[in-house]
Image (cartoon, rainbow, N blue to C red; front, side, top):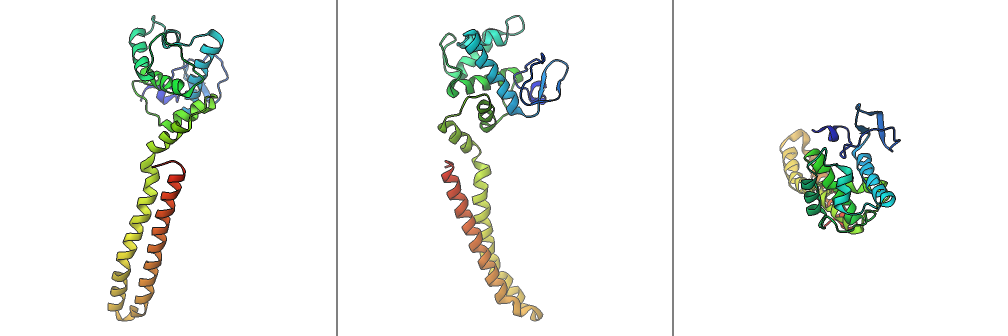
Length: 218
C-alpha cells in the first residue's frame, strides 16, 4: 500500500490545520492528513477542486493539475495528459467541477496518479463526491451497483443452490432413515421437511432477483 491509501487520504492532502470532515485522531502522520474512511479522503479532493473553480476560476484540466501538482515537484505534463485521457477532454477545455461526469473521472485520475493505483469501488467514489455536494447521476449509481453485481447476485445463487440441494437430499434422507429400523418413522417427516426447505430456498432466490431488478441491477 502507499502512504495515501494507508492514510485514507488518496489525494495526499497535506495537513495545515484545516478541520476537514472525517479527520482521524491524530489528524496527520506529521505531514499528510489521515482520514477515518476513504470516502472522507475522496470528499476532501472534491472540495479542493470545487474551491479551485469557485474561488480561483480554475476550470480546465491544465490549470487544475498545475495548481494541484506544481511542476517543481511533479512531471506535470504527463499528469495533465493522463487526466485528460481519463476525463475525455482537452487540457484547456472548460469543465464544470460541480458536475459528476467531470468530477468523478478527475478525482479517480488524481487518486491513481498520486498512489499508482485507484483501489476504490465506484460506490465509495460516489459517496465521497456526494458528501462534497456533487450528486451522482442515476446512471452512475446504477453502474456502481452493477459493478457490485457478484455480491448481490450471490443471494440468488445461494437460494437456488440451497433449493437444489434440499430437493435432492429429501428422498435420500428419507430412504436412509427408512433403512434404519429405529428411525423408520422419520422417513416421511424428513422428505416433507426437505421439500419445504427447497420451496423456501427457491422463493428466496426469486425474491433476491426481483429485489436486484428493482435496484437497477441487471
